Image 1: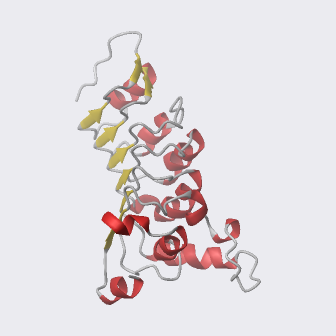
Image 2 (image 1 turned 30 degrees about the horizontal axis):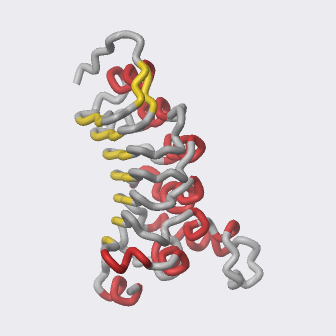
Length: 212
């Protein structure tokens, strides 16, 4: 698979059907390891079994027995290689995508990441959302619907502030949303054009005009 992607100078990887059973080691090699296609900017991994924190952890947190005694030097090599052609679109919905995946897969992309879909990713916690808020500043589309680990969305406000000029689509369905979140959407995230709050646990004490 890696040879095929490289030969065709692939810019996207989408796992469907049986390919979703691709193991964590193989998926890690394709996404953050030495087999990663150099032009890869889109990773559509919804439902993939291999997407998890252990599979995508940086080298110094993941021992595969082949680090050559470099004490974590392999991590820098992998991250540097990824930063040269960062991911722009990631869909890891319905997977075990967690906080470690944020550090390994998303933060190296920095401002290049435009679209992120993490629907039903129960392993994503408030800490991971905080890292997203401070590390990914050019998001245009963010989907966090029914991420059960987000019990208060305390880092949503800085995320809205940091992506105020770019974020145009936001899905917080099934998440706790309150007054301050809505005010931020209305007053700070001026680029927003679509907000989805289906079955959200909305706690709003007074009417707030979004002004969109």
